[in-house]
Image 1 (tube, rainbow, N blue to C red):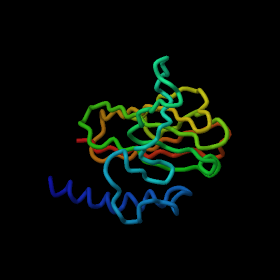
Image 2 (cartoon, rainbow, N blue to C red):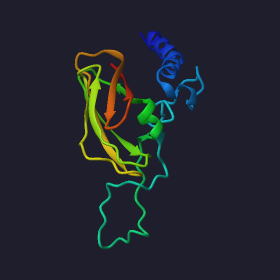
Image 3 (cartoon, rainbow, N blue to C red):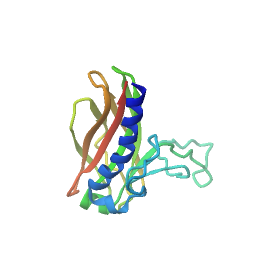
Image 4 (spheres, helix red, strand yellow):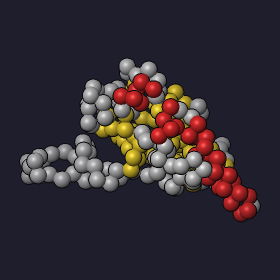
Length: 189
């Protein structure tokens, strides 16, 4: 059984980057070389539409108090996955991967990530389309102003699932011609 898991991971490490590189218009701008295994965890983006943010100070969720000065205030950086929306992403679409990692069978996992608007106009997430009922996304319909970001919450319900799972969720934004396609990955034990 252990040998089967190792073989599965070797195949996934070799085939998944090639599969993701072949999907979508951002394939030629991948940070990972084809055939190279991506780093584990949600901090490793699948394409250039996402980045791990260690030094970003644009977290909009920190309320300002009278004791803090807006000019000198340092906000805590957001740790985790940030998906950056560009004009190119809205016109041509884009892809990214959300990794839940290992989950126990029957476990319901929640993962938070941010959508950052790098366009010159506000964007609004108007709808989602999913390949499976086991994933869901909670969001509000409020616009995301330019240079701002919004936290989204994705839920993966592993009941009835077993083994390595790759699901798909398309995010449709107002005025965009193509969706942002998110691949949702989990290993159910």
